[in-house]
Amino acid sequence: MNRLRRACLAGLLGLALAGCASLPAQAPRPAEVGLESWDDTALGRTATESLRDEPEGNSGFRLLTTAGQALDARLSLIAGAQRSIDLQYHELRVDRTGGAILKALRDAGKRGVRVRILLDDLLTAGQDEVLQGLAAIPNVDVRLFNPFGVPRGANWVRLLGSIGRMDRLGRRMHNKLFVADNAIAVSGGRNIADDYLLPPGGLGVIDIDVLTVGPVVRSLTRDFDRYWNSAISYPIEALVVPRLDPDAARRAFDQAIDALAPLPPALLPGNWPGSLMAELNARRLVLSSGQAMTYADPPEKVAGDSAARSGRAIGNVVAALFDTHKEIMIATPYLIPGSAGIVAMRQTLARGRDLTIITNSLASTDEPMVHQAYALYRNDLLAAGARVYELSPGNGTADLTADPLIGPGRLQSRITVVDRSRVYFGSMNLDGRSARLHTELGLIIDSPALAEQVLTLFSVDQREGVYQVRFRPGTNRIEWVTWRGGSPFVYSREPETSWYERTRLWLSSPFISSDLL
Image (cartoon, rainbow, N blue to C red; front, top):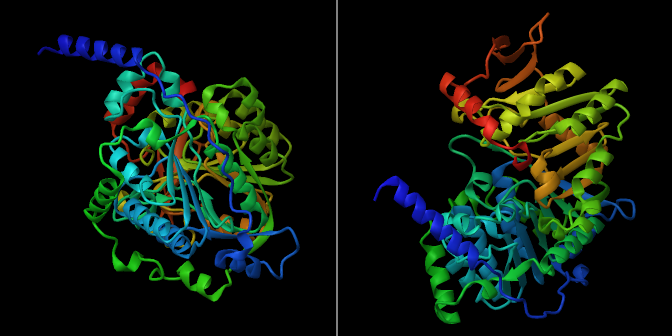
């Protein structure tokens, strides 16, 4: 079959799938809300005891800076939960770490814990049987957010079936949240997958979660409830025709999870150095204290609901963050400020504030087109006076246990520190996708102690594995400077990239709309 014939058949299949694309009508269902009597659980009592000496109304916070800490915290909290577990993620991959968490959730459901799992549908291809088996376990419910109105199947089937509705393909739930017993939460930029939670053997992913206890956890649960009860969230049973009866579905789930490679013993709950399990058993967590507010997009944003625009998280977060008296540090994997963002940054710098930006280099990013769009604004940022740093991929040498944290690797953290006192953690990038298409969730925490911890971790001056981007003296041409053995090394082109990579990206970039990046 020649290429033209294959293309025609693929197009016809796509049109056929698009023509029959529809979602089932949802039956009326009662609203479900988070656990109200959270303080009568072991985790609730631990949270209360950990904040006993803090001012009333304060919440407590703990940075999870390494993949091992992030995995240990989630597994320890699942093991300690007595009443409820809520998970909301853009991606939950069925791999070693995802399998370990799914297995722990199964066990929690069997011991009577209510488990609610909400996943964006974009990255669930091939997982229907596993998710159905999990949902067949007593006390466990699985819902998919903004599902595709096409036959279930591989990603290419979804893509073809979305012809004529490509806007739906890009409008996704990007939130990341884990809450146990409405008492202790974990949020930030990490998905549930080996890339984020398995200590790396190759290129390190640099990310940070924040563990949270106290009043702000109830706000996070209310945000979860809005998405869980949204008309855009569908029970998996409404989308996937069951192939097996419940008993067989549970057996199939067990077989699929047992077939995955097990975690090394060192990564099991309680075995990781400084494991959260020990503090949970002692009923006292080591925390930094402060006030916090949650910022979450309304779920209706993905439907293009004009009424949801006023509730967009990015506008509220940016307004809060740029209300600065001295300095801002922004760490983000993807940065496309746009003309409005450039104006805001220029105004901030013109008032005598300092602005430091840390992002990925072309060599370390997993989104080259996004980097190309960011590069269009790089000269403007430097001309306005911003300090710009880009990470080296490091050829797999990342040491994510180091202090400072920043070094070679791929940045995935979305963190901003304002005036060494306020910190933003969340899922939001400073780009068009976060502004217009994705839903996002984040926290702004007023805690100088936590801010200083973050700034120490993200120290970038004269760091190996970090490039300072600057104008070559006396010119408006960009150069990259890094340090090795105490000496500077200067590059005149995008470092650690080939002529072919740079040329291919330059040639393809005119065909990609920055509105979709």
